[in-house]
Image (tube, one colour):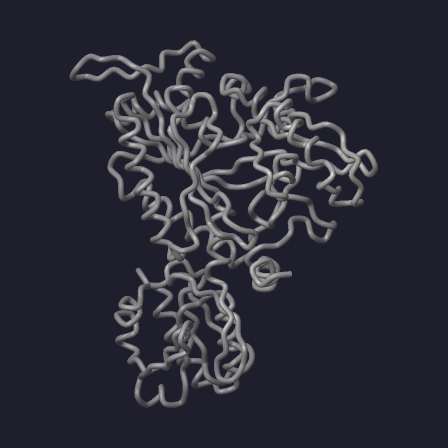
Length: 464
């Protein structure tokens, strides 16, 4: 296994060991395509969501937030086309009945295929390359033809029939439909004028055929989506503005620019005018992290037809009446978190010993500061360290107090979760009222007065 591919194994191991991500239902043998975020993971994902919300809502006077429900009227998914068109190409091994996603296995051998292709198109490619594709479970090459498999997760919510799924509702397959059907509500209650956007962070669910690559392709995930409503004539100009804006927001996370690139969609859905992905160079290569799409008036038009409601916008000055066009930014929290972990994962040598640390931007780190007493069996050091901890904890969250193990082990533990600064209280602190502040990346240590700690840390990138 090459160094790049091995990175994913290292990140998965660290994520489990240090409480970032656990396999869901692990004591029962796990549950494919679902993960739980541990104490460090939930802090990191909350920081990523806060960063996104800051850029997409708080920094913008033209974008507001929304939290729509996971369950919605099933007619919404019919109008949007999801009940018929939201599908991936599936084939099944005739020997062991393992299912594969055909477009992805073709992509793995260097053959371009797109989930939007027809069954005829995907089967033509599949048949041309069957001899190159083996079942991931049994290794045989005896597959059925590809067929479309709908990804919506059905539920019996509100269905009291004996079968329980005669009239299914659905767990939402994407969050944006909740934005579209609330367009008029937001417009009327907030008196917004075009162009304006609606942003949302929330859970979505897809019955993925072959979940894989850790957090990259899962069955339960969280989306960060913003739908921006524009005049038809301004759609593409606003689209280019949004592309530039999202690129800057991603760079502000501290991701290395050489690991990022734009990729244009080669096979657009019929209603789209343009679509680009921001791709990150994951351990398996460049792949989609976030999409920016120009969707035209398809979404509001479909829901106007499906609901029978007027979803036009009328300009109060010109009197012009039209269906707004939509541009969107859409990304997954899990994919972004995985990119951040891969980008931050670093191995080096310090003090003659190898170490692993996460080179996270300070305000993304799950723990901002760790406070240590040099020795846990010296009451005066412990008391002083706890005093400093309590004062800092009023201003900086989260921080931790750690007196478990020798000082070297404590440093390594904090390095692995990306804590940017460790503060050590020693015997000199009792006389000079200063602590030793250690920098995660360089290991450089400085003596800083207690009274100057907050100003010192603020100059190092911590916002509080």
